[in-house]
Length: 78
Image 1: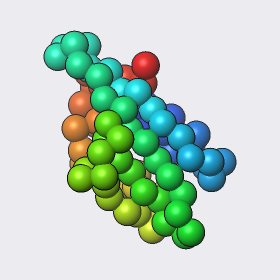
Image 2: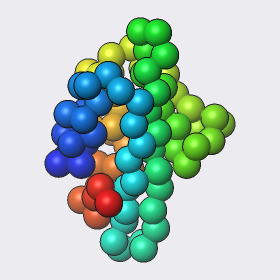
Image 3: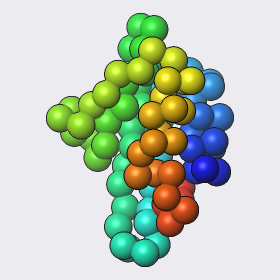
Image 4: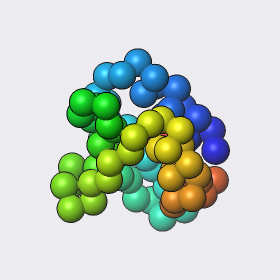
């Protein structure tokens, strides 16, 4: 949950950002990219538009992340 809170906190600035997420158990890393496009937030995983998802607000994004793989305690910002 701390990882999600840190992402949301940093995105409050309204600036496009990338976050590297690392899973210690799997020894794997992913890059989550966030872009602000007009009034929406666009999230991509590893720079792929195939994984792109639009959100209308940070609250929607937070809800989505809470129900995603990132909520696992083994995932941390790197």
